[in-house]
Image 1: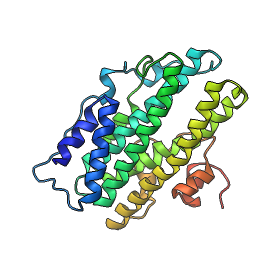
Image 2: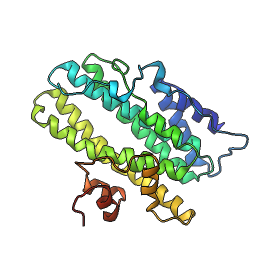
Image 3: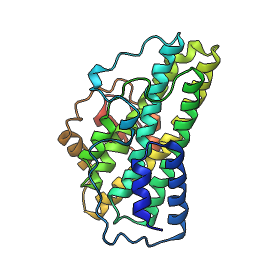
Length: 271
């Protein structure tokens, strides 16, 4: 099997069934092959995300605020936003394998496993969206995560710092806040199902951030760098001053963040 050809197909298709089938093939092949040849392979720079043929892509500030969760459409806009994050996360995990072919089998298996988790999350939420009478692509999206992946495509330490340890860790902060806003609407079976789905995603995303944390620290050790380089990378990408009113200390600690890092990110108690 030509591992990188199939990986590129999985990364660039918007057909979720095909993406899942190819990713499963890649995972099974990688689990049985310690050495995967990348001879003659050069990663491509993708100009547009794989979802561009399904979604209208707009600037983040062009997206409408999601406040009305009482109507089907209002709830669908919230679910669609989360579906889009999960879809983007599939490609981020696949790209982590595609972009850095020099990395070990263990690294490849970690991110292919993450991709399979994200596909499952996407399908779970997309089924709920469908039950409300909507489809992925019915509402505009922004390409922020795709852009972040492109910006960090040449340096693995930046990729691990920005994608898992910044954006995905940020999801651990936001998820409980969404559940809190929805809690008084649990009598709605759609909302109840959404909360249950978010709880599953939350627990599994902690593991995904753990994987990013492990590989970030692995590269730091390999390059004889202190892990405080994380804050230099945030500064480089103008992310260090972002306000974090609801930083999730417990989840971040489980995911590998130290109390020193957490206190530097936000003025919160940590021990």
